[in-house]
Length: 255
Image (cartoon, rainbow, N blue to C red; front, side):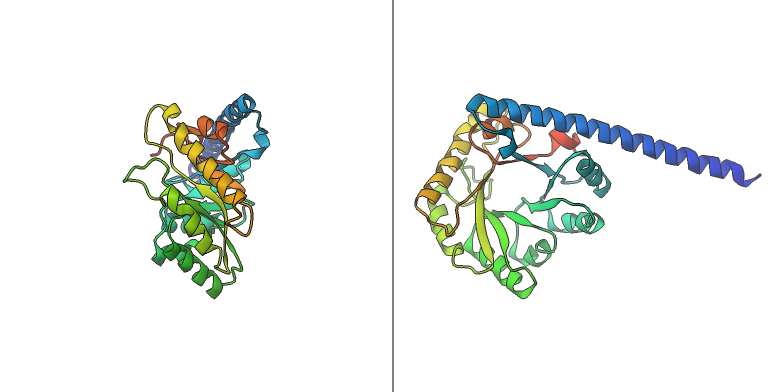
């Protein structure tokens, strides 16, 4: 009989955990529904198909368990900013049918570990980095790594990214690397509380992609525009975003 209270305690904790898990899944499902509704509204305003816009769930500081629950709710792409943190979560979630994008600043000495989990690297802003990715891919079993070129469209010195006027030359260089393919462009909009002020940043990136495709600078057509976050993703969608990077609006405020 002495073991009964412990058993009841364990059973209570398991039920409590299950209850919290169900509540979180319900909450994230509601948030995801709301985000998709806002994407659809933005698409309707400019005559776009909402299915052309994908959500990258930015899981910085979010636990592997919550990532699992987000995938259960319908998330298909996970975005991570830090290599070490991302690797730990990736190896805990290898059974999930989800794509992993690296969206933070990537140092060349972290490329080897980034390639262990990243399906796409969205933050290439130099030939030096692209060359390191190509070299590491060639040394591993990765025949190809899809990358986006990160462009600094706001002109803010605090942001990473190549200058818009230098993007074409960089893509020409990367185009010659055998294990790297540029498939899109990425930018971070102007840091401001007024989402409308980010519009020129997103419009600039869309125009740059169109020019690159028109001039056939890349051996393949660039398909993706990764732009827009929690505060400004509707404006980004109106300007042509195919990927929006959402963190707080999906997972809540970071702990």
